[in-house]
Image (tube, rainbow, N blue to C red):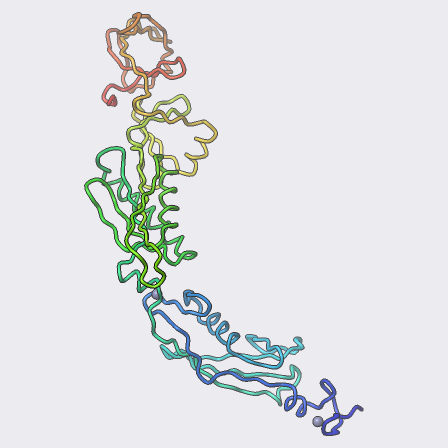
Length: 367
Ligand SMILES: [Zn+2]
Ligand SMILES: [Zn+2]
């Protein structure tokens, strides 16, 4: 049997010492009686090395304790003691009293012997402060204005709602990484929407995303606002302007059908110019089909149209004549005409010329 080199007692030794001597000489543990953590009530965040949301109380307490415990040996915080872990273990109990978490730490220095367990208490005080983001947010701070405009004079109401839904969702998503990605104010103007944002990079990201969805152009202008009192640096405010193409003014050619392109919620709405039926395509899928060139988008002024007249009807096909240019006649199979009504000789129609093909359109759908 070995003997403790400090007191001479025989028994199982740790680093040459009996348990009492080991605890006295080698194991030190301390934690402040009260730990103050800056906490912003407005957004439920706390500050350690940066502001973070207080989502999960357990992991919050765990983080704060780990930052504040000082110990000569590594301590393993565990949900319950285990005899299989050869570590110094500790269990944390807490009582949530609003702004104060009362903490009890139960430490087991010898995993196989509860006789030497210790208990220490502390409390974590959430000290009320407003984080920088909230103080700026509530002070109406903004770094950039995202101006959303349309190439039409006015943006339709339905589209405004959809655009704002996208802007809100993106800002929510960005805020987890960029705490300044908040919207401090929204102004609906005659000419469009102005979104005041806490972060320029967020305004740019949202602007670019809108362009991806709706097409259009993006630009920036800077305005000198003055000098920073402390640093003497010039302060600029940036306006990011997004000019959206009006999708409702465009056509889509998809699977040999011609449609008017519109937007409904998260989907693209394709209204047939031939039979009037409506397709709804998820915007992700629409983008995929566009890339694969299965869908072709045709600008309003790029659609070539022609007036035609029905000159002969047979069970299989129609004979038609162009009512301009060379007044040429041509044939078109009946199943390629998707109008709801039956055609008869003398009917005047409008056609669109796409890939040398004439697509016969419903008359009331002609804009
Ligand atoms: Zn001893
Ligand atoms: Zn806050």
